[in-house]
Image (cartoon, rainbow over the protein chains, first blue to last red):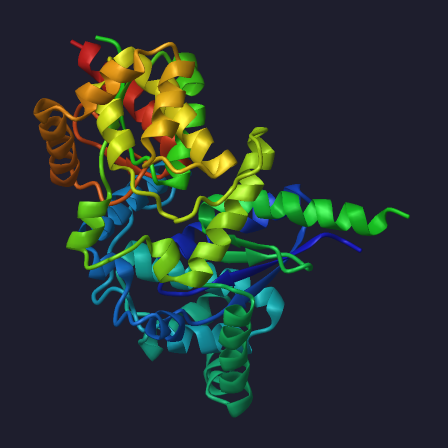
Amino acid sequence: MKPSLTFWYEFASTYSWLAAERIEALAAAAAVKVAWRPFLLGPIFAARGWASSPFNLYPAKGRNMWRDMERHCALMGLPPVKCPDPFPQNSLLAARIATALPAETRPRFSCAVYRAQFTRGKSIADRGVMTEILGDINGAAHDALAAAESSETKTALRQATEQAQSLGIYGAPSFTTGSGELFWGNDRLEQALAWAQKEAAERQEP
Amino acid sequence: MKPSLTFWYEFASTYSWLAAERIEALAAAAAVKVAWRPFLLGPIFAARGWASSPFNLYPAKGRNMWRDMERHCALMGLPPVKCPDPFPQNSLLAARIATALPAETRPRFSCAVYRAQFTRGKSIADRGVMTEILGDINGAAHDALAAAESSETKTALRQATEQAQSLGIYGAPSFTTGSGELFWGNDRLEQALAWAQKEAAERQEP
């Protein structure tokens, strides 16, 4: 069986964006199959007693995160980062659309949502912004928006968030392997891919 | 002028340990001079309303940190990590001793303290443990302990913590360059060294 890794991402999360930009190329080079799983960090933060992002709750941490993002964008050849207003954005609509989309469309849609939000400062809670992005990736925007609002999609996203929590996930991005090994943060992407390869190799041993 | 970087570390911090194990070799390879600056994270966390480490306050985060440490120790060829009891340890005595020691002795002393704590589970608040470590590094343990309790040392450590805060430091390890560029976390050590090199190169331009 091919090595596989689940990529847990939150649309309002800056470091989820960086991982989304990197993961497909790195996974292809490592021959690891990636499952993109959008989930919501809001309920997990709320359970911790946080009413906002820790980057807002702790201003020194927030200032350095934005500076760190500026440095990363420059190093990665991305457009300069822009902080959307408000930050964090309400990511429910984007997460529902991504949940409803076919798996093969998720990466392109998700990267487009991140770039609209973090390089052009667009509101990802805005249906017009979502319609434009869906149009650009040749999706049937009207159908995708309708599917995003279906009860099946709402349930699926709720279940994804619950599954994330039951796997011990507490931040985004996170990566989990088939055995449940959990890696937190864009900085752990390479280690997570290597672990997925190791697990697959161990399964093939007699 | 040679590139330089300040290494801000907290003795109770697991990721400060990993950075302490790596920084001298990486800095030598990058021709960057490192200043080891112990400081206390306790007052900074207290100002944030935290009565303990976030790894205790948020159990899912704490569990994954220890697992992440296990993986890092294996990857780095370090002995397996051991959680001291209690965690976090009271780091005041170790930080005062490190502050009082000559700069050239700090790296060896600090790494020995980290290994005693995180691979043998020793209490770093224990004067006996400190005496043993100072003896092992050929230090005059009695003199070092006396110097650690001097009012000059206490003031110097308090000032280091205040300076860390005024530089925007909110966690450990952190790295700052001459211009005040701030990098947080063991994962940013390579970027911090590269930034220090870049700053030195820019200073040498006409």
